[in-house]
Image 1 (cartoon, rainbow, N blue to C red):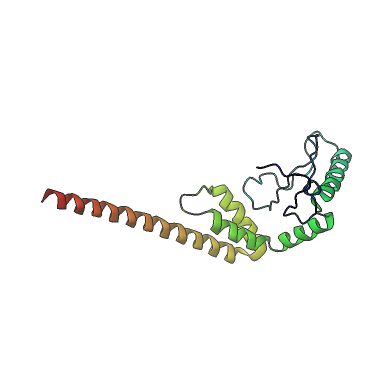
Image 2: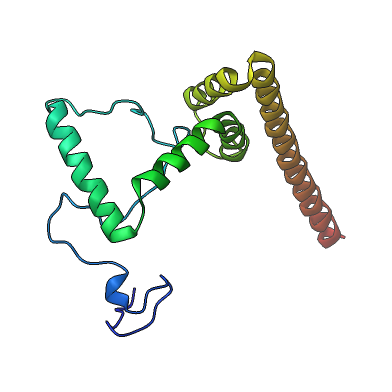
Length: 169
């Protein structure tokens, strides 16, 4: 992107652009944040909090330091993060249903293992009947998409045959 002058007004709501974010030279400080839920793609190790080979004390000391930097750099408090986390946890079953239907679409990568994880989350939040119904709905949507694609391919083939027949007359 373009460079922002230090006296330019920007979208973050602060007077000076340099107050919106500062550059940090060390690798152990975040420069961007990415919010994820436990149903996000690539969340294989959700719940694996402390990396192998790191002591609890070192881990929590580093977490505390990083969270203080997050608050300083992004004005996101740990209280706001906790509130958001509680909201996401409360709505995890609905998030999983939305994820199942939104990501597991025709011609989109959605592994059976991912579907099973989402099923498990939905089942834990809403019960087996809701989880089974969500899976049936997904299967019906995928079948409908397959049939539409097949019908479109047949229509195109028929149109091509008719065009070829016109040209031979």
